[in-house]
Image (cartoon, rainbow, N blue to C red; front, side, top):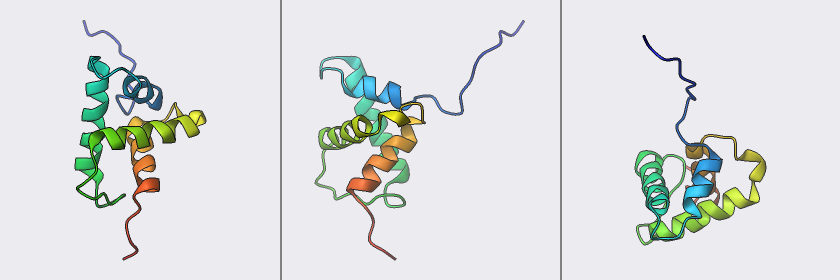
Length: 96
């Protein structure tokens, strides 16, 4: 027998990433936050936002946290969308 599961189109919501990114550095959630942001950067960087190599994951985490705190009405959205919007706002790509 297969159990019924409630499945979202994404794994983490904005509320999830906000919670993880607010954890102290020694908490595993903090590492998940940094890894999640790194994954978004590796997957979407250059297409939706343009970072310089000198940015650290810690700096990017602060940018994402600030964006989410400014947009609490969006916490229900996909964490990838919110992370991308935060980075796009701070690091727009030049017009082509």
